[in-house]
Image (cartoon, rainbow, N blue to C red):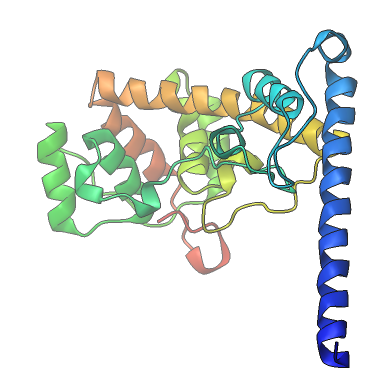
Length: 248
């Protein structure tokens, strides 16, 4: 065997050894996490820890992943593929309206998108026809601090307008709601700290999403509420948009 071929085989064998050790470590980590979060279920489990290949999960690991999916946060990618992934895949929960066809959205959805991102006169007029309401012209720039102060002086579901804006601009501060498939998370390692952080954030995301749904339902129940929203929006006009929050 010549030297070049020997070096190639040695390097290949070393790479395979590293992959094998990494897979063993990942399996051990997963089982340790299972035992940490679900000690009783772990002890009672009859699932096998054997794997058919380094790329697949054992029955016991999948059992743990299923529990996480049902009780902590969604793991559809892992459960669907059943192929080993070195990190926790975080699926975006927020709106994807940036990538949707505007014409396929509902009337109230179009209204919010138009308010936040701005529309010329003709599309705004068409939106009025869909809503069955004559809407006041909307200012392009608002001061977000003014808006937060303004909603403290009113009552009802309109106070959820800042939440709707945060959802649609992916500015909630919640990792599940603010990420997208173009800006996803690939460093969520399988550790107790990361799992606890994702679990807490997921619970918070559910609360934010519920408030958002309540606001949308309020608009849909009576499209005249859209007029109230525009009037509140206009009260928060920003005279110096270059130095403040750009909402449109």
